[in-house]
Length: 180
Image (cartoon, rainbow, N blue to C red; front, top):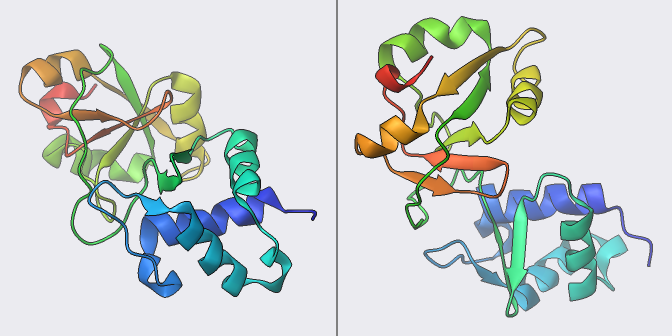
C-alpha cells in the first residue's frame, strides 16, 4: 500500500489534537488512545487506508520532521498542539535557559501587556531554537518577530514548563517580564 504520510499525519493530528469525537475516539487524561482504535477510525475515514497498519503509523512518525506524535506499547498520542476542551495532563520539566517564540508584529502590544497566552490551544508553544521559531513565525507573518523567553528565570519564578519534544516546549502562560 502506498501511503501519503503527510495527509495521514494531518488526519491523525486532527483526530488526536482537535476533534477525537468525530473519529469516535476517547483520549485518556494524558492524550493516549489505543493504536487499534485509531487504525479502525482511519480505515473508516478513507477507503485508501483500509489496509493501514501500525507499521504505517510508525513510518508516518519517523518521516515527520516536526515530531508531532509518539507511539508506544500499543498506544499513540499527539505531543502538542491540542485545542481540546479541558487540559491534558503534563509533567513539569526544567526548561533551557532561553526559549523562542515567533509571532506576527501586530501581536506585540498584547504580548507586552499580557505576556504569552495559549489563545485557542491548551498551552503556549515555545521553540527550543531560533530556526524553529522563525519557521513558526513565518506561518503568522512574512516578517515575523522573534521573542526571547527567559525560561530559566521564569521557571525559577514559578512558571511551569513542559517538554513537548526536542524542538517544542510548552507553558501555561509566560508573563511579560520574562519576554525580550
